[in-house]
Each structure stands twice: as C-alpha cells, then as structure tokens.
Amino acid sequence: MFGKDYFERIFKKGTPWGLSTLSYERVKYERQIEMMRRFAPSAQSILEIGCAEGDYTTMMAKAYPDAIINALDISHIAVEKAKNSCQTYGNILVMEGDIIELLKGQQHFSPESLDIVIQSECLYYLFPKLVTSLYLYEYFRNMTGIMKKGGIFLTANSMRGAIRCVMPLYHTILRRFLKPVYNGKFREWNEYRNEFLTYELRVFRRTG
Ligand SMILES: C[S@@+](CC[C@H](N)C(=O)[O-])C[C@H]1O[C@@H](n2cnc3c(N)ncnc32)[C@H](O)[C@@H]1O
Image (cartoon, rainbow, N blue to C red):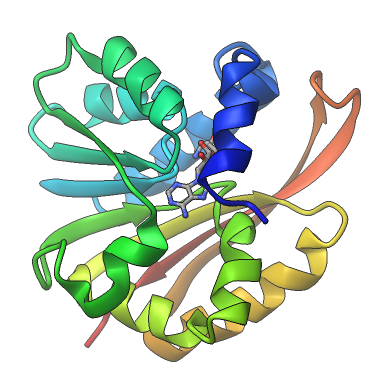
C-alpha cells in the first residue's frame, strides 16, 4: 500500500508536502531539534528514518556538527535529491532502503550503536505492512536493539484521519521497550492543507 512505488510516484511529481517551504514544517523541525538537544545533547550517531529530500537532515547536521547522521528513505528519487541537498555536509550519509526490511534480523545496523533514532511523519505509513506481516512488535524490539542504552527515539506525527487511531497503538508498543520522557501536542496552521493541524511530538528513552 505505502511501498516504494507509492513514494516514487509522489516524489516524481515534485517536492511533496511543502517540507522545504512551509513555516508549519520549519516550526515543527525546530521543536524536534530543541527536543533532541534537551534529551541527547552530546549525540554522536543519529539515524533518521524517512528523510525525504533531506530538509530536516541538514538542520540536524548543523545542530550536531560532530555527529554522524545516517539518513534513510525508501524512495530512490527522494534519496537522490537528499544526496544533492546534503552534499556540503561531511557528516551526513544518505541511504536508500526500506526500514522494515533493513531492521529484520537486525543485520544492517550495529547493535546498540545509535544515540538518536528519529522517525517523523513516517511511522503511520509502515502500519499496513507491519500489521499484515505480523511484524509490528518485532519492529520496535529490533529498533530498540540498535539504540544505545540511554539513547532516544523521537517521533512527530500529525493527528488526522486514521493516523489518530494508529498512533496510540504504536505508543503502547513503544512503551513496552522504551521509557516515555516527553509528550507535546501542538496545533498550527498548515499552509499545504489549508487547515489547522494538530501534531504530537514524543520522545522515548532506552533505559535498559
Ligand atoms: C511525509 S515524509 C516525512 C519526511 C520527514 N521525516 C518529515 O518529518 O518531514 C515520509 C517519508 O518516509 C519515507 N518512507 C516511507 N516508508 C518508508 C520505509 N518503509 N522505509 C524508509 N522510508 C520510508 C517516504 O519515502 C517519505 O520520504
């Protein structure tokens, strides 16, 4: 449903969702940076899942000049664009891949290697595949396994339509593996959708 072909079609049409231009996104990205700085100020290794064209990736590169930032996206077109926009930053590695497949068996990433995993406006796209492949629980178990003890998982998601039903289930599973340390709710005007949108920004920490 929300597989590679779906996102290639979206990125082929142009720059989707206004990620690089909307003040809605800028404000949200700045909040994410603030939370990363608050909960993981000296992070050295970061994984961004669903980096799209790299808009947030470059903000992280500036905020964490000494960290290695691994930016991942399923779309080849998005990855090519992200490589282009991130090329002046020596601390960004852009990769193409499906996080669900890469996390299976946990062979792609080193265990306990990441200070921050960020997956914003991306988790809900994974839901149909995670549910139909009975992999929902394992996904978060494997993700926890690649985080350092003390590392954080950050996610921000707009609460619209079916996403409102999906996110509480994710949060429940996340709490099985990680400790919630921040839960913020924000309502902002979204110029792309021409409506006020509410989004949640949550931070979880690996404690054990
Ligand atoms: C709405 S964009 C979010 C971009 C950015 N994270 C943000 O918060 O603005 C969702 C991104 O997730 C990517 N994506 C969706 N499913 C994915 C998967 N299974 N593995 C890696 N990336 C995925 C899409 O290609 C798209 O670029």
